[in-house]
Image (cartoon, rainbow, N blue to C red; front, side, top):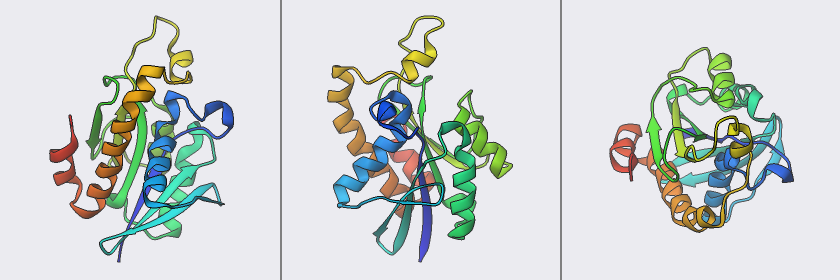
Length: 188
C-alpha cells in the first residue's frame, strides 16, 4: 500500500485558528470534515489517517508552531517510512492572489519560516509543496499583522469553494500523481 504524508502548516492555539497563516490546518480540517475523519494528538502533532483507492494518507498538523514544522515532518516521514516524493506540505503564500492554488515539486522557502525549517530538517528543497494564495493586500510594514490576521467576510465566503478544490488536489496528488495534479489544478 502506498503511503503519503500530507502536512498542513499552521500555528496551534485558538488565537490562530482562523488566520491566513493557518490555511494548511484549515485545508486538512476540510478534508477531515468531508470524509468524517478525526484527528488525534500524537508525537509532534495531530494525526489522522485517510484511505483512498489503495493508498493511505497520513494527515499531519504539526504542534511545533510554524517555525519548527520540519521537526514534525521529518519525524513522521521516518516513523511511517514514507518516501520524500510522497510528502506534500500545504502552506500559505503571500505572492499568489487570494485562493490561487499552486503545486510545485521543489523551490525556495520564499521567506516562509515553516518551509525554511522543513528545508533545513530535510536537507533538501526537493519536496512537494502546495501553496495557497492569501494575496499581499497589506500596507508596508504590516505583513505580520496581515498573515496572522483573520480572513475577511468576503474571503470566508470564497474559501468554501477553494477549500473543496484543495481537498480534490490532495486526493489527486495521491491517486493521479504529482504531474497530473499540477496540470489539472495549478491555476484552477
